[in-house]
Image (cartoon, rainbow over all chains, first blue to last red; front, side, top):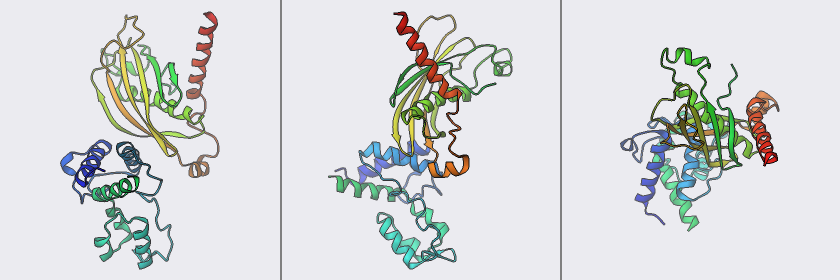
Length: 131
Length: 173
């Protein structure tokens, strides 16, 4: 099982290739869309590369859920994610750090959950199960 | 002008790799303007030929049932220009093939005018990595119906031509 630093290093290299960004732009807290300029199709590319790099299977919608709430009013009200929605997020994305988002759960800020660190944590979890 | 940027397939291994060739004729329209007095193939057309080679490789892997669209060119490097009179060899190799899409890596070689070589004799003139998406089945049926507008005729026809040509060669032996 590779160390956390090794996983992060490999994730960084994957993102450099997939997004054509510079190595020094990749920090743990960098957001994929806001900071690294990822577009929707890049998410699929990243998934393909991570699978190859780490020898794992990433089921569709597991790492990057496409539409978590599907417009359900129980989950989103007035543009904000409800407590029920937050608990859904915790369950579907246990690898994401929700601490900042929980303080002001604007639906539009949900893409900020997708950070480099989130991917590294997800991979770490997958590799633990695999080994 | 028809949007076909390869002339024929010379090698095809289903789901794995494909090689196509394209002869650059001075009669092609774009050479008149690109560039006057110095006919070189625009780099985007070189990439289009590679994308068609790779796209057919990806489409054939699922028996042309998926609508394969070019989603992104992850990287592309060009080492030299391709001149009218040359033959381009397009090599595409499948890297990933999944229900949602596929990626290929490709190399483009130039056989200079006058050479009789059948295999690449020098370093690639271009290399690229291309990512294809399968248009979401449910959504694309809503938008476009059952008809596969990607592999509607000409592109698919190219593979058929390659098969006919191979059969002829076999019969001649």
